[in-house]
Length: 392
Ligand code: SF4
Ligand code: SF4
Image (tube, rainbow, N blue to C red):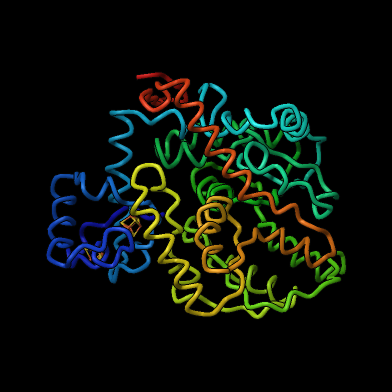
């Protein structure tokens, strides 16, 4: 990820005018970008920017405008801290993952014990945090029978550290994680989360010398298994399917966009592309779902209108955030919304549990319950400095 380049930026305002969230009139966009460059501040932008990095793609001079916003945001977080709910670490009593663990606790604890203590081997399914704590049914499939599963907060990819506290803190987290991977002997991780992809395939190899753990998306893994004759299609799915390319993939090799298209063709789908696709894909709105709900809803509806426009029967996802956010609006328009492995299960004759929306509702209720019991959850802010966490 290149830093913002104020030498090449022409202050044309295109980035903020065409931002799907901000949609500023051009004069106001020019004013805000100049203000940010000169004062390194802009409350208006910081509040409503979803961090999707779409503006980096549309900037005509490739000046990386999102990196300017990110820099301002990182300074704010370092000064004012981050709300505990966003920090994925066992040191924080109430974060989204620990709240998820309050639902069906015993079963999840048993699974976590397996994911946090896998046998040593060079290849593993890296299920991250969202699946074990919030959407455990996604891991209950024969598709994942051949390798150990690795995940939980103990092995969190550190994406929150990079987005909230920057490169130096991410490096500390990454070095710890790299040591753990070395102890396990793991050299290849098959990933289920675009945030993990960004860290394992993009961030860590660029900031940690010798980081040699390779990432492969679950989609590319399934395509590979299909070509090796191990992923056998029993039921073709002859529907019009479009794929929601996740924002964090914008930072990675463009080849990552080929996997979902090939996978969907393999299962018999007619692949249709939304107006904004691949690196110009639009965010689902999830990052603003707490701080600016009405804007997040507008964004989600805008995305679903692109699905409607191409008459897709199904929108497929690799990100549980996109899936939970967009499913509600897709269902209202009679469009099905599936995680990619759910489609793989259907194609191989397995019945997916399709519980993700239900689990998302349970999680939302549990968050509200936790906040009403512990009002400080929204007030407590933490900072992380030199790898150490402290409350402000
Ligand atoms: S960052 Fe790019 S799009 Fe934004 S004002 Fe500068 S040149 Fe224009
Ligand atoms: S990162 Fe996304 S939301 Fe933020 S200004 Fe750029 S396009 Fe808009």
